[in-house]
Each structure stands twice: as C-alpha cells, then as structure tokens.
Amino acid sequence: MVIPMLTRSSQPAGEARLRYLDADIEVLAPGDYVVCAVTSRKIPVQALRYWSVDRQEAYWDADAASSRMVPAKD
Image 1 (tube, one colour):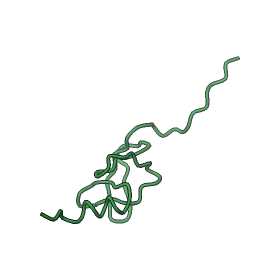
Image 2: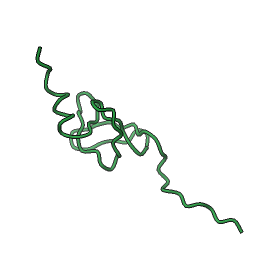
Image 3: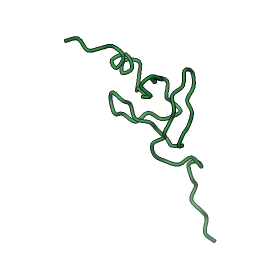
C-alpha cells in the first residue's frame, strides 16, 4: 500500500499577482508571496500589510513604504 505524501495546501507555491485596492487586495494569480518593491524581500501574502494603490507595489514594512513615498532629498 502506497501512502501519498501530505501536501501543504491547494494554493500553488510561488509569487502571487495581486491588484492593490484602497483597503483590500484582489488576487489575479494565486501564490504564496509577493516581493517588496524596496527591499526585494518575499512577503507572505497572509502577512501583507503595506502597499501602494497608485504604484501597485507591495512593501515589507512601514519603513519601506514610507521610504518609497517620500521624495529623495538632493
């Protein structure tokens, strides 16, 4: 008798494609994570808290989000 290995979930592994809305996200293609536009770190979709609707980008944390939103000083 062969016992199948347990699977993590039916959600595919890899990068998700999301549309960032004002207070929500829309899943265009399911996945486990998105990539921070500032740090390039992988953000688990379940942990995503910071994004820009205008830029359609995700951010690792508030510091990354604010660094992207504030213009650089010359």
